[in-house]
Image 1 (cartoon, one colour):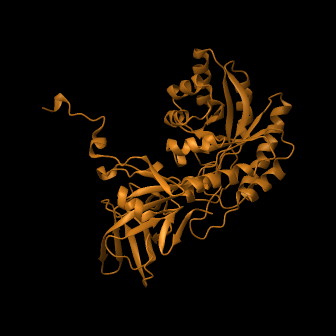
Image 2: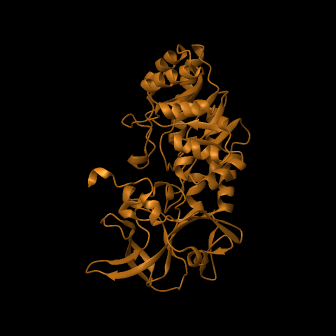
Length: 418
């Protein structure tokens, strides 16, 4: 459930009409519902209330520090994949011992940053990375807590770009060789083995791939313990999907029930890294129609948000429901919703049946809270939009709209040009 509903034909976020925000802040903008964020976090986290666990929100999915601080206040940890995300998490007040550092390309500088902050765990993804972390920890006179991210070769049945648990993917260590890597790690004096990790993909709509993965990890943990390697944490990653269109993913409670039946007897503290399932339907992108255009074979709604604001439709062919902010109950018309970017691939929706929309009216692009603003860019020197949070009948800007001066920050014209 989310808190974006029509009231007398006008789309609201909680108690605030979205057209009011558009009038006062301008368009385009991202809008998040505080109540939905809160509700979705509790729905996921409470599903595992009966076991020792830590819910680490996936910062990459939606990294505004106001949202991170909200989750921190609810007891969340953070799953990070860069030094920048570590900085954001710390600034948001997340305790370092609730932060897990994932990702295939950690630099030495990022490793040192994480070690100095005493984060909970590094998820390692290659033998060379393991050596580099051991060396970095040795220079600091520390021991780095680690898990090895295992690639279980399980088909997550999702878009190939967001599949991460197959042998051909760049992520993790092949399950068959991971055991030998653990043995090597045990011999390194500046590493402390504390966990096993995995993450098989994003926007999964079935439980079975998670269960297949868990069964394989249980066998690995058993073999490691037989060799005297004790595992305290089992990081099962994230990936639980949401409804964008016709998908019917399991509820967090159903997901938890299935996992807990399978994980019984493992004797590990569980770590989860949800992102999309918490924030996806908690955010929308509001855009204004600049022009309507009738082509020889298609109708176009040209809006002021483009692929620089929301790249998922262009990058993945992803579906986002689009609806008018004010429902005038007009007849429907088939149209493409396209942006101002100079790319044919700049679209938010294609061949979409929408009520006839007039120039100047507002559209809401739904389910845009995950990988929306977080993947936005300044392509075509476009200004990135503001982010708004609504709570009840009030709203606040949690990220200001960029200015033209922001576009040039860090740039200079060198003397060598003249």
